[in-house]
Image (cartoon, rainbow over all chains, first blue to last red; front, top):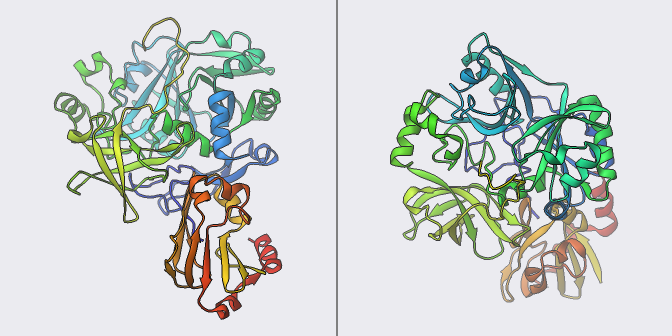
Length: 402
Length: 123
């Protein structure tokens, strides 16, 4: 039996979009941090029965009892994810909002206190250097970036922001995510008041005797929270959480299948420096004022694409049959011409069928468009599908649309 | 009846000139949740080492090779319909295909069960 790992546990290192994962977690070369680090919960994960793999430069749990069981558990109860490999940054200094707006296309000046925005760190040509969450804390911004890209992001921020802006890497903080329909009930028991947070809102709470920063956000499509605590307090917190009968630890494998069902892009696979926010269908991250004013990296190209449409678009794909079609598969039109590539794909545990996302020529991006996918010389029938594949179940206060 | 294993983690159970082939418990454990299996049709001729079947888990795709040459007598439709059988009973109900052996001397290079179980511990 051969073993060809396709999308691994979704490594993000230096891999061209649409290229099959080759099993080299460091991406082969050019990594700034060659040694593999451990997260504060390393021994805790092993004691919980995790299978550890190198990911984003860290030993990370890919699964505990099994990816499908963990996926279903998160959709029906509450899953605990360790995402301490991600970069937690604090950006402060005079007019930090205006300074960040030169690199991010979001409206940070109008962002309310303790509110989060999904945003993108852009290159001067409009390509995506990373995707991130930015939270206003008074005049400062708490920014969470991807693990594999955090070192480069910090360099970008330091090089491209004015000297008056300071970027602190909060290395002493661990980050957990508690996701699923029972997450609010569980966390309310440990941090009273937390269930009052609305989707994309954060706040400081006492949690197991420690100061914690808790945001109502996540990467699964479910209601849930992301919890930043000091590294030396994270093990006690993780243990308290899994003592609740509703909570189980969940690995990176299920994190990947959950976010794929939720239609959420993974940096280094579905978005990268070759893609723009418009190609990637992330135009919700560019609000009306920023579209009118520009003034962010790559604005000429991005505003032109908004006006005229991009050449390619990121779409969802429903694949016929049972066999997963994975990253790197070619997308063909009815005449057999290559019109794009699959950038993420796998078996959806919720839908019990293969699903994928990828880029196609814009005239083929309408839902329902029939396409063929080619993987290892085999053709698969597929159709463009609206995303998310599985509806989001975020906790929205009232009827307000974000 | 004799049971052999390959270094590619296939097992082969031989009864006279007929053999049943599957993947080992170690292999299914390494693959994780299996979501797809494709088995060869009866009548297909396989050479030793040839790609004979496909198995895919949530995370990985693998080819299953013919441990010995022969003609396929039957592919296991049960695993095509319910691939999780390979996880739950890899060396029993989760078999992949049955072969009529071309040459029983091809079995000579394979590991016996004790040797395979010992070798797997070293991986």
